[in-house]
Image (tube, rainbow, N blue to C red; front, side):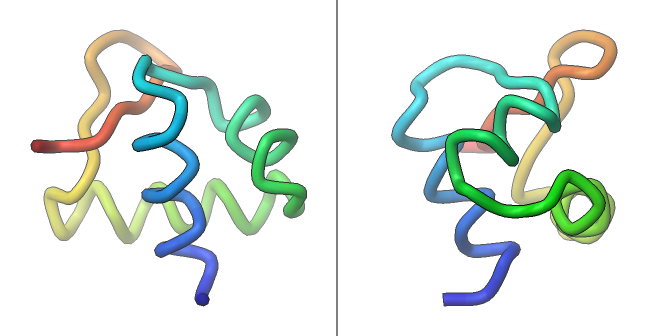
Length: 59
């Protein structure tokens, strides 16, 4: 499973918007990797930011 998939999986399991640091902590990966994945996933419209610095899955 790559980091993008792990970020999406973590957000799905959380069921609520999370900060990048919270995603990193729950997924057990580095925050820098999460930041890069968030950038890619937002570009692909797989996740969205409902409020500043929080991210959720685009359903």
